[in-house]
Image 1 (cartoon, protein in one colour):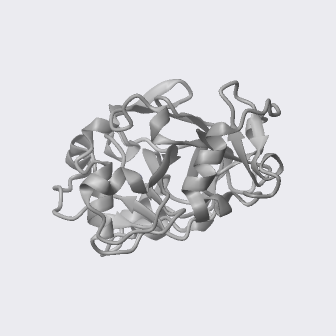
Image 2 (tube, rainbow, N blue to C red):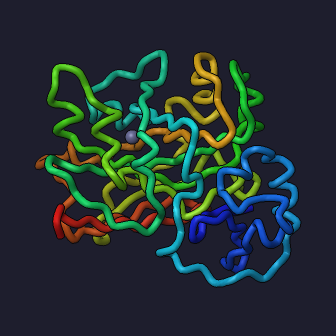
Length: 281
Ligand code: ZN
């Protein structure tokens, strides 16, 4: 099942790529608020799998983040071995965890204003939580996953790295710095949700290309280790870390420029299209 936000309302995306309005098709039982479906995810997902309506065509520009107002946003700093090497951080016993403030979320077809500094790309698999839990066992972790989507952890490297302490959360939370979408895909739709091709390109030039099976902490391990500390809530999202190929680790370094178009893709889920403009443009 594929769940998207169209004009601010929850829609189910049909196999033909059309949208069925959740609130209308369920005669008011679910939606229209995209966050409301997480309150009773199992009932919603069961209903949504049965919905057979034809739906309406989707204008990508009207898609918002599939999870627009998560209660908590977790982001993992170092979760692919090659990226740990290029970033100069040895893997820790706990995943390096910060937040991207929710106001930075934007949809899958977005224009983002470049703030002062050096803005870098990080394509990431993002998971959404279906069921609350604390101290979730690794073997139960997939039961707490509503679905998977594509994310970009856009990062302004000057503020992130120049001070005496890293400023991950602030430097990664400018408006539009967290594109997600195009929709949330339930794990059963994917042949192997633990092994998906993940990549991004700028104006057709590949910048990152890996597989999610190369994570240091895989999805069950991330859920187990995060929930060993915090309680996960329905509708929370987790940015699960980026593979190697970021601009800050290149020689010479490369950062996003006005007019460039970043396409981020995960196999079986879809693409984000993000265009950059300078402030005041
Ligand atoms: Zn990241």
